Length: 271
Ligand code: DGL
Image (cartoon, rainbow, N blue to C red; front, side, top):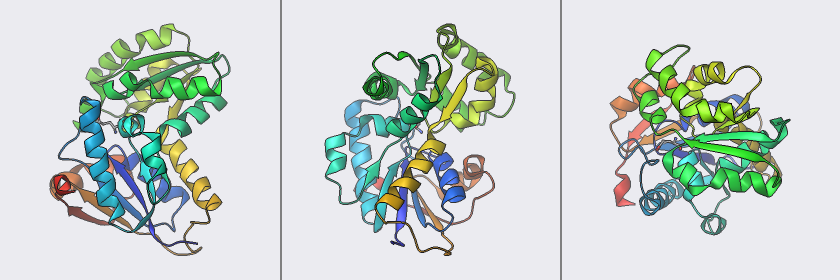
């Protein structure tokens, strides 16, 4: 048993989609969230810059006395090296392997689509993890660099004409490939899920990386005997690198019904 917090971090607010799932399935856990709102997006940057940012994010979070690190960001998860993660003083997980396990379970025809930021798709992380599970998978990967700015600017919901056009443009080759499973490989994308689902059709299962990872975190904590004391009420603390006002204005979009907790601004480039 361990009442220390779970650390969840992202380049911006997309990782809150994972926090929302964690709050639902592990209400007794404290959560420390860091969103690098001053430096988002990471997905258009070089590997070196993303690595430097991820290392600073992790150094900051380790100072918060946390028991587990969750990179709730497809871009960080695809870039941060496994050998470096293995040397961290607390267990670490990203979103890639959890999402791929869920996709492997869901697919019936072995044709799997992956969408993510430019850095995520360039890294080849999702196809590599999927092919490790079964080399026969036919994988279609497409970078969707406009999705994050669309979400950050509120172009989501059930219907948005601009987003629907962009979705159709990016996803046409994925649909044409006949995939029956599509990994939304970025934690911003669940906000576009209703429109993506409509474009892809009811025969395609969408994999939400935030949800899948929250389930995996729960299992890992139980395995490592790190779950918090039963019956306690968990609290959330949010750290951001841009102003707390911009967090307050946008956080509820990602968190849904839950937007409690303290919000604190930090200078991430000093870590
Ligand atoms: N939430 C990030 C991810 O999951 C995308 C945002 C960004 O480009 O920084 O990849």
